[in-house]
Length: 213
Image (cartoon, rainbow, N blue to C red; front, side):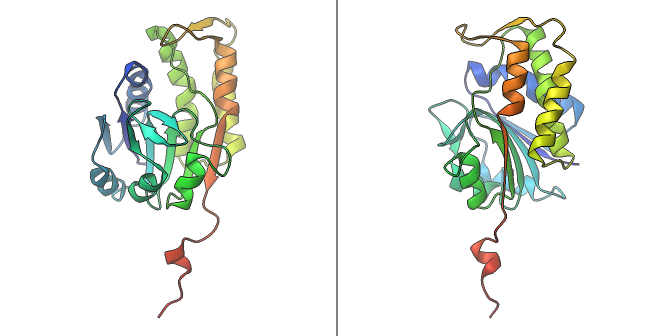
């Protein structure tokens, strides 16, 4: 399936995530790749509307406040996400974007996003190129499955587990951006898999439920 790729690139962490973005683009070419600190929301919406199933992937910083190129600069809060990706499917590869009813994903769905996939926890990016390539291959497995239409939370998590199984024979310790975090690759893959959450709209929006006149 076709999709729109948004890379909010603004600091060392989001620049390191460019390895994942490149891997996605090389594996499954998007209709368009936005790579900027603040890509125009209307252009993203316009491009998304040209895809048959309105699917997008955003790689960025994340928090309950929104998605952004840095932790301080928010590109889109839940309301803006609802307007930008209205009626769309969105995978946000970013920290702390999903989970309970107060999460960014839940609020984005309430604001107009049809399906939101995110992570309930920190998404790490290792520093060395060969480690980034390995993590990109594992993380992208679920993202590519989502692009192809998979929306079941357990199946998406299992896809990450299965992809990571090919790398855990040598359970090395990874060197992360910032230099203060050290995790084994199996721990990182488990965190990616089991932090994955899916929010989807189950109730009609006010405009859908309004009576015809």
